[in-house]
Length: 207
Image (cartoon, rainbow, N blue to C red):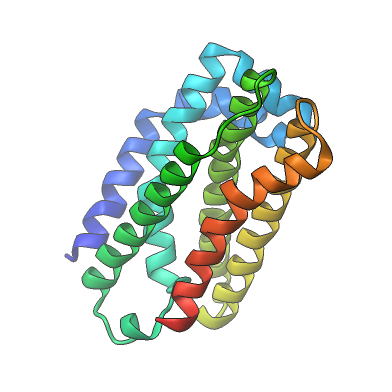
């Protein structure tokens, strides 16, 4: 049995143990995709935000397994890597991406009169990561069950991830508009969201 199979089994067991928290927060996470005010409501609830954060942390491993299994991130230097090494590289890239976002965040000064709103906008990323990971995993399961080719499955999942990412940016823009001008909100999004994502995409294209 390979390492990825063992980790997948661990994810299933952990998911069963967390089922209560998942069921509790899933409606709120889903509602964030429909209305920006739901993002604020979720952050204002200690219980919901705590469950959302736990779900976000839990989903990192299965999401990396899905990305690895379908090779959604495929720079040339990983083309011939065997599965375990490829998975380890995906985890390292994910960690590096998160670290880059943290470093950029530390260099950005939040608005003077809207720190709470700014924090809500920043943490909205966690909700949309949960949504992205869950939809990606569901898509992987459906495609595998339906016998869809790996190439088509990969394309579907990439477009799904892009759609959720763009929706996340739009919701964050709507939230930031409550404490910043439109131009300032765009600049925040360019620094906090678009810059690290562009670096991630460029690394897949040119490395």
